[in-house]
Length: 219
Image 1 (cartoon, rainbow, N blue to C red):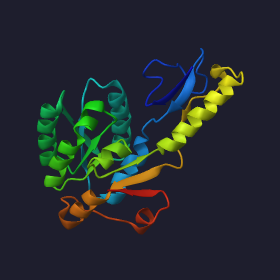
Image 2: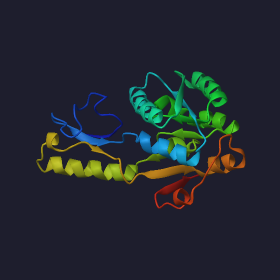
Image 3: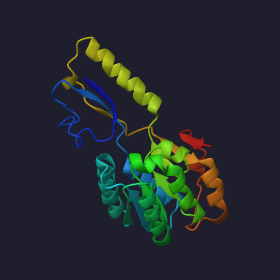
């Protein structure tokens, strides 16, 4: 069996070990590279000290991502303040609370947040607070920026694994592929244009970022 685009295969109980998945299963993971997202926050908003984490506590993958995010943020001297909700209404209330307390916002891979991203991102933008997210689709829907995978490449890798298995290779002998390198920087152009006018936290746009080959500006 080949799985595709699972954020945390170990945490989800699909495999016990990424290098040696065991059983009759392997696949690809889009594990959010939280260190690279935090590094981007520190590069674009160097004065940021507090990050508001907006998420749904019942989303296992999102909570797993956020725990790693908090660990790395602490290493970098950043404070993370939680704002949770179980539906769009309570998430909007949490977002309003966070924009009053935090320099920037962040949401992990969270289905409920993603489905309401347009409304949540508008709260951040109305308050001129940069809103970072875990996926390019969230940025497409109004969040400011992220660092993430190219899903076409993930699809190609999943197909390559499938071919190997069809040719007789044991899935247990194929390590789970986690995309950690050669990721893309995604920035929402309209959100950027608005933040450039009056961002609450200092906004810096370094030339190495804005002219990087892996930068993708989304409308």
